[in-house]
Image 1 (spheres, rainbow, N blue to C red):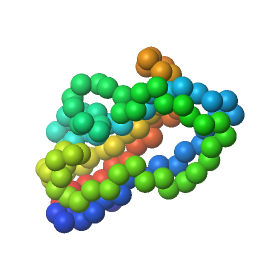
Image 2: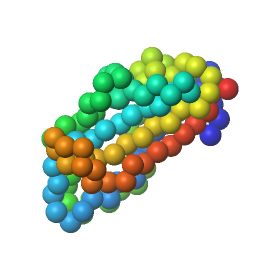
Image 3: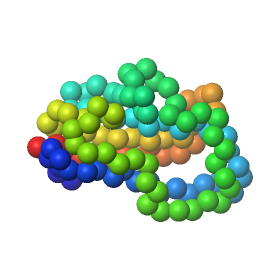
Length: 111
């Protein structure tokens, strides 16, 4: 996907949860074209969960859930340089880095 100044980006996910309720921490990250990694929604370089102690409802299945929308350029998330960016999201057991989901990623380019 290629975008330029003034374009709007919508970040969506598909979510399917296990049959039992699970308490998780959700991590959302952004890798910029210069390999600097930010963690949202504060977009700090410190590794922090975006959502902590979150109960995933059992047997939830929904597609195209909007996480965020923003216009380019933007400070939050920090997208202003030309190049390729990658968002990543993962769920981990609460207070651990034991991932309980796949790491989902999406990349896009600003020209």
